[in-house]
Length: 469
Image (tube, rainbow, N blue to C red; front, side, top):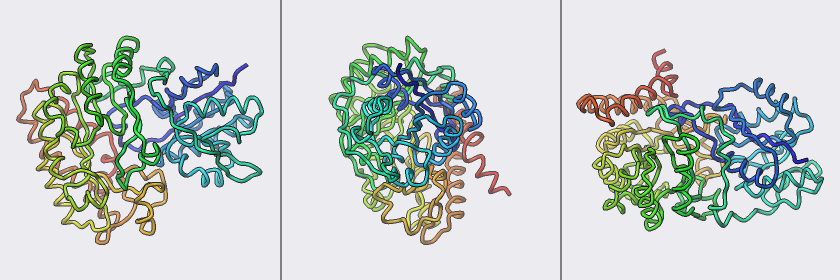
């Protein structure tokens, strides 16, 4: 009889990405499909989306009694994930407890040293590693034979050799049928929401990011045909109305990307699409941006980070400041909603530099702007440079909206107050703009709903209350 595996999301909420929707756990969908293909019984328990407490998780798992529990986490959700596994150990003393995700991949030694209830860590991609691990555990074989994991041997943390990355992403078999689809909605358009992955990896080397390390500086793509087929299946089988692309770098290959757009135009799925990509690609594609909109892309996020070229160069953000401004203008001209981020809190940050960033954001004129803090993940290139200045060591605050370190001229509290002011000033101007839009304008309705959830149901709600006190 095969092992019974439960894949779990941690009960972590930061009021950041969740404000616009409830998002399916795509990584667990892929893992579940890989486990099931090996004959392993598996279910997905999305405790985060269900808003379940640790006590509720304990109760449910005590009833289900799986032999293996897997949980995934970013750095911000890692404390909640580790605490959840500790609680799971209390009700499932003999189960194999496994942790994966980017934080565990790089911080495996610290986790295994400080959290004895975590048995094994999946390092990197898990679709081949997790099924092999479960089979080895079930057969009583040594974990030494399983590539891509970390565990304890004679009480000491150790890691096996890395597992090669998957060669063909089209072979992945997402277990979409294991989700409770009633949970997943995009609040802005009140649509059933799915997340897809058309590629993995990024060939850029931004110093504040870690994706190029996680994916070993490799970039792999799914075929346009398989991606379109998945979107059609999500629509027809599960009633999906909106699809978010989870790719780190969605549009890298112009030929492949245009073929995907052409296939979408031919299929006419009638599904709304949203993605993140790089400003230079939007400028490159200005002659085919009409295809983006006609194929269903209503919303595009661009990581601008800074309008100052010196700051972009210091962060190894391989774009020119003017490219970002041009990209936003080009998308706006096509009627595509634009969203971008501006990073605050580098060492030389001052009230004046923040005001300059705010004014540049107003000049760029995206529909949505986020003023976020430079956050040094403990495994990113930036960490070595700033570690001695870090004042916040609670990883649950590493969510881009809590300042982790001061600048030379500003305390963390002053930085936070400046960030909130940027949001208030920027969206006051956007509100003025959209009052002038036609009443039946899609963009007006979209922006009004976006601003409502941003200021009433996000981290800003707490921050603004704190400033009033």
